[in-house]
Structures are given as structure tokens and as C-alpha cells.
Amino acid sequence: MTATILFLALASAVPGAAQAAPLPAADAPALDCLAEAVAREAGGEPQAGQQAVAEVVLNRLRHRAYPKSLCGVVNAGSDRRTGCQFSFTCDGSRARAVAPAVLASARRIAADALAGTAPRRTAGATHYHAASVAPVWAASLIRLGRIGAHVFYRLPGAEVASAAPIVTDAAEAVPAPTPFAPWGLLPSPPPPHS
Image (cartoon, rainbow, N blue to C red; front, top):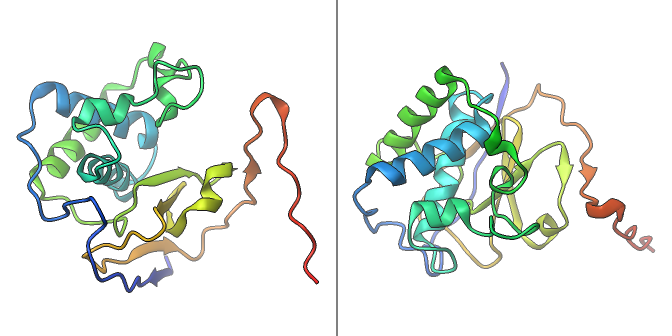
């Protein structure tokens, strides 16, 4: 496999995100919430993709704009019809069982992430989406790269202490994103360049 490494020259810490601050001790509900997010969002991904999803959840936990518990981060917005932060929390996916092997793998990845032993994958990303869609919010963020089936982003003006690269598979064909069109509404086309 040919891999292209995208080096990100990011030098300072994310504003409001105490990158070096330790995470709170993981209790069973926190581990369960992170494992469920990994399993449902990236259960079919290779290990690197699953680790990246876990890292995004933890990056949000560290950031001042998000809830201060893992379950709070994972379930943010799930009480609304739209606006959930992770689609599985409001699209009915929880009604379907997760394969035991997928859940076991996700629990190992979640435990490693919580223990701080998982490799850094996302260069401080706080957002991601499936590469097969193009959500309207993506244009307002800084694109960091792609890992497996997900594209990762950070907030504008936010930089990270680590210059860890995002590795993408150059041989992997990147499908054209499908515009996210809730209720059948398509975004306006961009103005022509002069």
C-alpha cells in the first residue's frame, strides 16, 4: 500500500483544549459510551480508523465548548430530531445490536484511548464525517485529512501541540462527496470564478 503522509505544522495548543491535561479516571459508563461511539461510528474500519474516532471524542472532552463527560460528549444533541453530534445517537441505530466482536474490539480501543496508550491519529481533530457525504458545516472548518472512510477537521484558529501526521492511503479512490441535503434541500452552487 502506498501511503502519503500529510505533515501538519501545528505548534500551539488548541485554545480551550488542555491537550496535556490528564483525562478523568474512566469509569464503566464512560468506557461504555466511548466504546459504543467507536463501534457504531467506525466498527467496520481498520484499527487506525477506530482509534481516530475515539481520539475525536476525547479531543472534544478536553475542549471547553463540549460537555465535560464522555457520555455527555457522545450524546450531545441526541434529545433533538436534528443536531446530534454523532448520528447513531439520533438516527435509530441504537435499536440494532452491534456484533460482539466489533464491540469487543471497540472496547479495547476505547480502553487504550482512555489510558493514553493509543497512538495519536488526528492532529487534534474535533470533527469528522463519512467521506461519502459533504455536510454543510465542513466548509467552516480546517480539513486535516482522511483516515479510512472518515475525513477529519479542526476548528479554525485552533492549533495542536503535536505535529503528528494524518496518514491517508493514496491508492484509495476518494469518491465525490454526496451533498448533505436534509429534507431534500440542496445547497446553492458556489459562485463562478472570474
